[in-house]
Image (cartoon, rainbow, N blue to C red; front, side):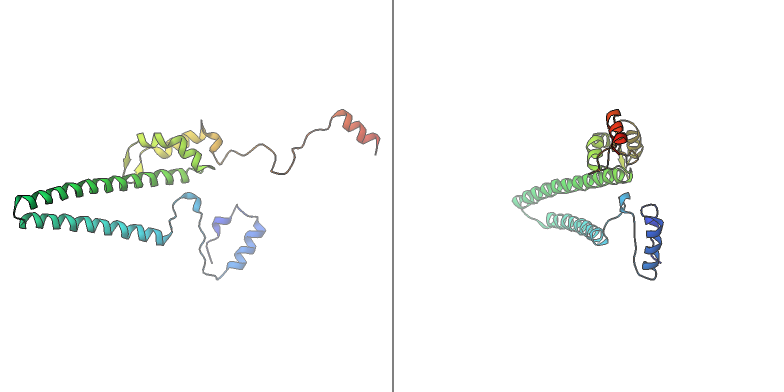
Length: 190
């Protein structure tokens, strides 16, 4: 039976039972994507493969430069190799910084998605600077999840998914009490 437990509490019991019956014996997997932990397998595999390929290319490039330095003759060739080495070192540093930035931004996005906010964009705008000030270690921003919880229960409570709107539903006018005049007219003209 497919995992439809994620639907409990989201649909009525009647609908849940109907879905359970309908999906029984079918090869289907359901998951709650709001936690932010899901990445399409193909995208993940591509990212991992790209990362491995870049690392291999960097290692091969470094090896090639070292071999050329050993076999080079002449001052001009050595200077060109040194120039290439410094250029590649700069590119490597830029690439590594971009990788760190991507990992940091992914950690911010996951923490925000897991916070249960109803507006991830607004929450990110409010807390990103604090995340930048925090320590980033082993793919995690130290203390950031706790900070998000504090903010969502304090200053940014309006972004919490636990806060329910108090206005009327869209397209439905708010109910109001009748005035004394309206009440009298209704009773007299029945």
